[in-house]
Image (tube, rainbow, N blue to C red; front, side, top):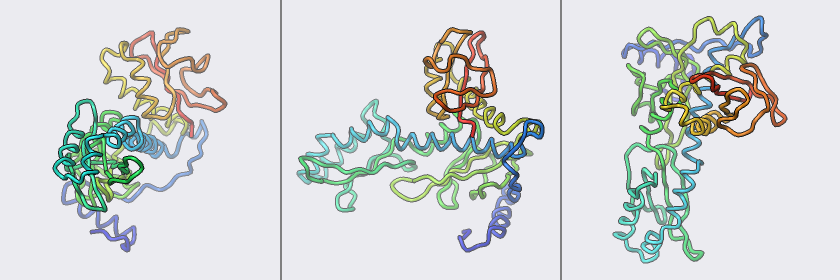
Length: 330
């Protein structure tokens, strides 16, 4: 184990030694460049700008599992389940277990695991073994606390698939220093440090670690591996690099909707939730999806809307309709 008291340079060396055994090369983190850039000089931190965008998207996907509409709706299902509340009130353990089992396997609900406790003692626990983003709550009836629960609407595999499908970059999940699952092959057996570069089969990735909650407690580490771009991106401004990175996510998502014209509004909704920005589909002056928005949107560059600037990325997957993605420039 790489303890917290080990100096950073020593930890990098230890990780590199372990990964070398698996045929994976790890290098020390790239030097921090000045984040400011001019249009003529280009962006000196282009790869880091792309990493920051992909990490922000992965974080938003995780946060949606914790605080999204689905999680909130299922929490209400648990809190208001009368059979569960009656079972807790009467103290019938078989009835508690039956109620928890029914809740987890109710069609159209999305609870992947549910644990019910009283006084810290587990009364029932139903669901998969590898679960992410647990939500805690209290079970009450008539003003009395009957117990508590821990619930999740997503498992590790589901989160991994969402990030891969939405963002299009590989990732691995780790519990402590043990890999649980992942998409990078051969996978680093232990999580490399944030900011290090990993070379797998001749391709170099910058790594970023996200620390999330495992079920029912503890930490799950998400290792995100963002491909290092070529030198051509250095001619772009940092704002343009970020816009292009968000645009790459948007194009990756759009490619999953077939036929795309029949799903423009669904795409707009997913783009907004994943990027935290605004999205529109227009054909000339015709508004197809996304609502009113700015009166005019440039093909690229920036636009001011609602009193703030937005970076613009657009593309035409099915001409003449054009998809516009507006994201905060910073």
